[in-house]
Image (cartoon, rainbow, N blue to C red; front, side, top):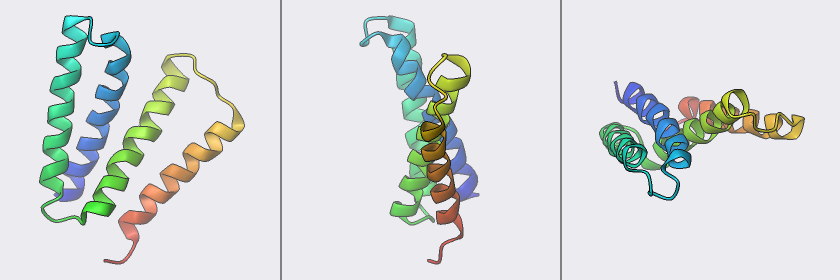
Length: 105
């Protein structure tokens, strides 16, 4: 169950990271409220996962999901660069994140 909480935390992190763009420096009220709510939810799920997953592994998976997901969202929905090197490095983040799941304790 801890891994499910960790994945949920990472997915929600994608949401709050993207929503930061729409807060316009926290000058827009509702996007700011949404971003803060998503951040709180994300950290709640991360902290719940940390009860049984080592902190280093959990944080790497959490940030890996967030970073890769945010970049992919930017590529597919915000028209950001699809440069082959950019995609290659995102692939490395994903491979490293998955690898930690299977690494020894």
